Length: 437
Image 1: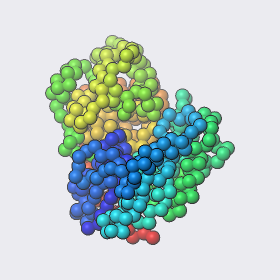
Image 2 (image 1 turned 45 degrees about the vertical axis):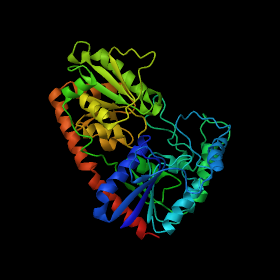
Image 3 (image 1 turned 90 degrees about the vertical axis):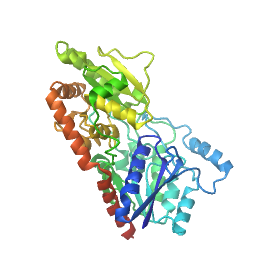
Image 4 (image 1 turned 60 degrees about the horizontal axis):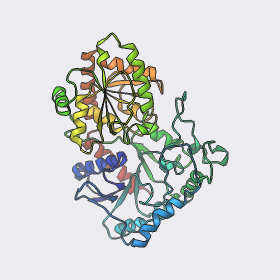
C-alpha cells in the first residue's frame, strides 16, 4: 500500500482547503482500489476527520512559533501594491520540512502531495530540500508567480490580465507601475528559482491554470497535468426547488438568481461589480416581462448597511458553514451566476451543477472547464456586463430550456467530477512521480 500524505495549510478553512480535502477524501474512499492509503497533514484542522492530523510542525518550539509570523510580515515591510490578492513570501522555515522528511525515512510516507501552502506551512527553501517523491496540486498561481497568489485582475475594458511577470521571469523592467517599495514579488520568485532545481509533478484543476504554468518561466519545462476537483455526488445533488425555497423562506414563484463569493462582494476577482452592472442592464430590459419579478440571493456576506439599489429585491444569506444550507440554496435558485475575473476552477459552479442548477459565467479561467456553453448554462464575453445580462436572460426566459440545462449540468458533474474517477487519475500521476528520477 502506497502511503500518500496530502499537505495543506488547513483542511476545510477556505476554498482551496475544501478542494484539497475533497481530493484527500476521494483517495480515502476510492484509493484502496489503486493500492493507495491517504492521510492529510494541516496546520489548522477544523474537520475533526481522523484521517487528518493538525498542529504546528513536530519539534517547533513555542518561541519560534511566535517569532516566525512576525519575521514573515517583516519580509514585506515597505512593499505596496495595487494587486488586492493575498501575497505570501513563504519565509522563514517552519520545521515542517524536517517532519515530512522524517516521516519518509521512517516509512510512514511514500509520497507527499502538496496543495495550498501560503505563509506558515512550508517555506520555499523547505520545499526545495524535500528529498522524496512529490506531487503538487496548484489551487492558484502562487507556485509559479512571485509572492502574489493571482496576477493583477483585469482592469476596466480588459478581457484578460496584462500582468505577465510570471512568463517574463520577474525582470526589473516588468514591474508594474502600481507597485512601490522593495520588489517583494521579484525577490520571492528568485528564491523559488534558486531553491526548486528538481522538477515536481504539477497538477492543475483547469486548462487555464495549466496553460499559465506551462507558459511560466519557472515551471515551463516541468510535467503538468489537468485533473479537476472531485465532488461528492451524494452530498451535492438535486432537491425539490419549492421545498428548498420554503425551508430558506425565499419567495416560491419568482425567478431567483444566486451569487456567492468567499468574503462577500469585497473581492474584485469575484466580479460582484460586473454582476451589479449586468443586473441593472437586465432590469431595464425585462420591465414588461415575467422576469421583472426577478430577485437576487447573495451568500458569503451579510446584508450591508447600504445595500445597492438594483430595482430587484436582494436576499442576503450570510456566511454558510455547512453543506446542507448551501445545497438548499443551489436547489432554490433558477440560475447561479459566477462573474469572476479570475478563477482557478470555480467550486461553487461545480457544486451548483451537481445540484442540477445552470450556471452563467464569463468565458475565462477555470469556469470554461465547468460550464458547457448553451448545454449546462451560458458563457458571456469577458468582462462585458451586457453580455452577462443577455446570458442570464437566456437561461431564465424559457422554463423548459432551464430544466434541460439543469439535467445536463447534473449529468456533466456525474461524468467529469465523480470522486472514483478523480482518484484513478491521481493514482496514475502518483505512479509517474514514484517511477521518476
